[in-house]
Every structure is written in structure tokens, then in C-alpha cells.
Image 1 (cartoon, rainbow, N blue to C red):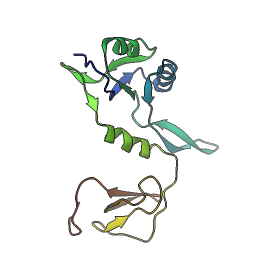
Image 2: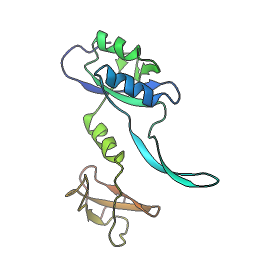
Image 3: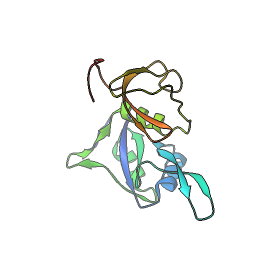
Image 4: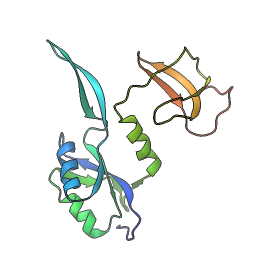
Length: 160
């Protein structure tokens, strides 16, 4: 089922293995808005350690289109593209908020944390893309990462 109209939505595009970056470049060359989320990881080699960018979702990237038949075919004719993710009725749109969250996660900035917090503590983000947002501290994840629930209303005594 094709969605006709001028409203562009985000869709997940399945690609051939390890072709995400080339498909992203082809789509950008065709003036189709796409997003290829990556994350930075420490790669350990025998002789060195190096920070590398790896796909957040191997084999997938996201395209923004109104999904008319011309755009749909143009996307699928891209070398390395396999299919838009969906069901029997057609491709399924991804909410803009989810893509915005992925954009924040894929930024390469380091996050700084303050004093120790405990599960359920209310916290306020003071810098970065979420500056001014309050949430509930969930847990510490490694040396430089924490998890904070910022989705939906929360009570200060609520356990996650």
C-alpha cells in the first residue's frame, strides 16, 4: 500500500550486510533524506586501541519520504537496498520522536555526570542536547555512561 501525499515520514530500510554507508551515500546523492545512526566504540586490536564508528542497527538505516510509488521504487533501486520494513499492508512509519532520540544517541559528544545517584532519584540534565530535561536515574552503565528515564510522567518515589 502506498501513501500518497506531501507528508514525509520516516521508514526503516533493510540493506545488504555491511552496505549501510554506501546505501546512505547513494540516497543522499538522489536527494532522498536518510539517517544512518552510528555509535562510537573502542576497538581492541593486538597492538593498539582505537575509537571506531559502528552501525547502531547493522543492516538498517532510515529514509524520510512520502512513499509515493515513484519514491518507493527509487529507494529500492538503490544499490545495496533490500526492502522497506513493514507488514502486509505496506511499509510502517516510524515516529519522528524516535528518530530524534536516535539522532541524540548517535552524537559523538561525551556526557559528564555529577555525584553518585541512586535508582529512582530525580535528576536534571544540565548540558548537552537534553539540557533542562528532568528524568529518573535508572542505573550507571560502565565508567562513562548512565541511564536516565525521560519518557513520560514520573513520580519521585517510583521504582523503575
